[in-house]
Length: 151
Image (cartoon, rainbow, N blue to C red; front, side, top):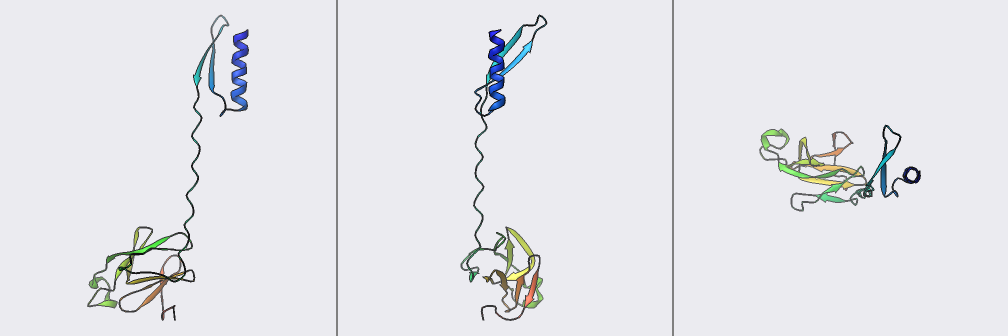
């Protein structure tokens, strides 16, 4: 009877506070009604690590060039930088020389881009190529714009 009470107490403690329970009791009945019990240690799960802090958008006026190798972080926490040079043959706007380098978003090349400068200004991302042409990112595609947004 005392063994059964001990088992019930261990099960009740585990049910009320499973993390604090230091042992888990497994009870089985035999054919003659005797209860056999074994105790196995229970390791509580490790604490969950806090999430990493959210990326902060770059300051307005941040510029990326090949020379400075900087990165822009936009308001949606996307990262932008310049990648490999774009050959002149792939971009007729700039023949006979290259327009610049591939724009890279979150580590992935943006096909059809060739920039010498990226600009983060007033929560808008701009790119400029070697021919002086400019585009702005609308969240899903580049849209051609006239003039330098800094003027």
